[in-house]
Image 1 (tube, rainbow, N blue to C red):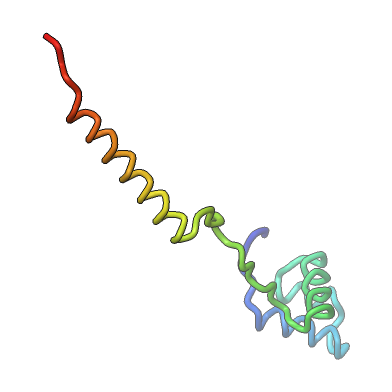
Image 2: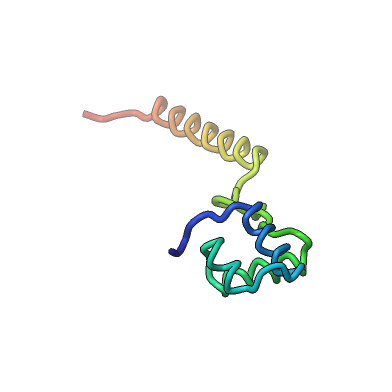
Length: 96
């Protein structure tokens, strides 16, 4: 079936059924519809963290290279350069 969202309550139910020995693993997997490998991945996560859902990464998206202070500095520098070029062009003498 691949790459489908499995709800947390379904994962938890499968882990509890297996842990309490109520059903055999093959019967549980047949009912819940995910693979043996997925089951053991969920079980490993549950044993290691006590949670059945992977925590979301705090590093999503592109990292910010500049902070606000950097952007203000760049903006100020660019404005100063623009002012200098404009001042230079004002005093240029053109010969025809």
